[in-house]
Length: 511
Ligand SMILES: Nc1ncnc2c1ncn2[C@@H]1O[C@H](COP(=O)(O)OP(=O)(O)OP(=O)(O)O)[C@@H](O)[C@H]1O
Ligand SMILES: [Mg+2]
Image (cartoon, rainbow, N blue to C red):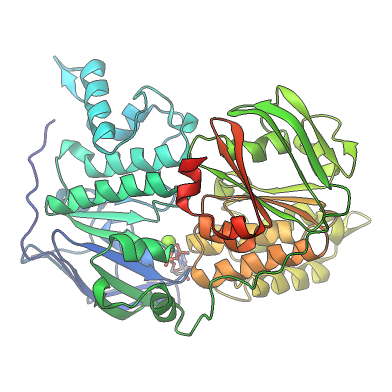
């Protein structure tokens, strides 16, 4: 059924005294804020600060504590919202995990629940045309009949936005909430997304944009709200903020001298390569050759679809390679399979960590020790005490919050804290000679980013060969001894030392 167009409410979306308690823990304290029509608000805060919880209250997923008020366009709205009353207000959401159905097509995802019908039948052609238009508006070119699971992360993000904006067939939303939509996107794709955001704002939509990439906040927002431990600690026009450093200070509540560890190279360039890849082909990669020496940190990057994103799976053997040899310490990895790769000493932190390596209903401890069980097992028994100590130490090292509760179910952690648990999981493995990190800092706050990069640097100092596949040019330039830039599946450019220090978004384009 076609729906009426929502006109954006003049007075904006006013939140008054929003609090939320889970069990005995209060995670939001008395938040009052107005999302103004036509403006982009950056919603900022450390992992676990309460951003997603606030959004879920607006989405009708969580019920706020008593005393909360919501005023939309000057009128009081009864609380709690339900998903359908939230949608009736014109609230649209792209949640942190995108929430797409992988096995369904792009078109089915975009039109979920609002199929275009003709004589009572779903009109697939009209549907496909409409979806193509929407995606075109947002700047991507994908066949609407493609299954979502076959898309790149960037394409999925855009599909999720198309679905949010056009939910129920409406032309615009009063409020569009984007909870970390840019994880995994490179410069040009991000710019396109920002254009889509600005276009929606120009129609009068209020936009709440949550990100941990502070340069994006400066680039695209009009104002910022910062949450710390569930409290609103700053509300300001972006123009009044001096830069990323100041934002980081408000977010963390302390100064962060630098977002990155000091640059130290541990590369032993006179030693034989630990990882030697020759003529690797498969998926989006053609004839890729490179090697990594002990302690060397090599970055691999490119625009979306350039092929770099397929390299981790080819190395692990979870995508079959067509040609090529992979050697670790001079010995060829016998077969292309995750077991063979792991036995050879290759450890991989996949980009889609939650789906691929997290078990949401298991505890933090169970998730962390799954790959390291052999270290805790003697005569078939898990040495419970030792495991617990190790897990607690790793939780502290990676600042997993809430602290000291390894039996907590992974699902009840904030998105970024789930990431930290899964990152700690590879950190607790022994016998690793090659470490492949795919978008290692995606979804974690500025403080945790630094912790993770320090850990990578420490592994390098122990002689591990590191391959960092990332779209974050800043983190690549701070950490890598060498950066490889791919385009159309092949290696186009290699930057060392001083060159690697200067990598910018331009380098992808120029490759
Ligand atoms: N269903 C739940 N049950 C219990 N606690 C929860 C639940 N969902 C969230 N929490 C807790 O609420 C707090 C806020 O989490 P929230 O997901 O809102 O953080 P966030 O700001 O979105 O963080 P991130 O940047 O990591 O996504 C966290 O301490 C989290 O553990
Ligand atoms: Mg969140």
